[in-house]
Length: 191
Picture 1 (cartoon, helix red, strand yellow):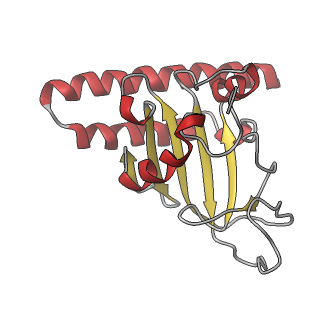
Picture 2 (cartoon, helix red, strand yellow):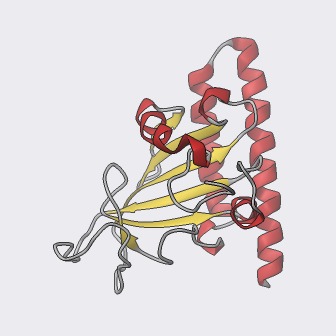
Picture 3 (tube, rainbow, N blue to C red):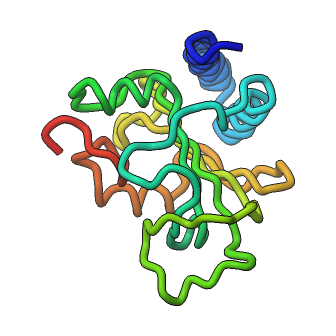
């Protein structure tokens, strides 16, 4: 499959996911069952990983391509991907991310890696991965206006849902970079 086709499919999938979430949110608001909305969205997102692998997406600007040294709570070894919507926003001079932007971070244990002489965001070579979890951010207009309309989540390596929606830990930490649309790495216009 050609790279342009994969990118078009990735962008189309992102749009479908956002529309699906908006539908779930609208349905749940009628019944007042927000926690189920978060679990439903996490399930839709997890299923999308299998349908169109995020590992075909570009790496997030502002961090090394491939594995790099991270910090808790994400893990000591990370890999971060962005879908084409987010990648275009990084490159366009946008002040904020567009609807459907997705950032996915693999959270790995540092098995077999000596981190003693390494600093945060140093590239890590020759690492096969020891996946503990995925953390993600999805831009969903109207979802959470007070937190940039980001939907955050964390899925364990076995696929179980650890957190979804607007987890306090995610919101508190990412509020430090509210002026960069709540994203730590890769700067948007003027940030």
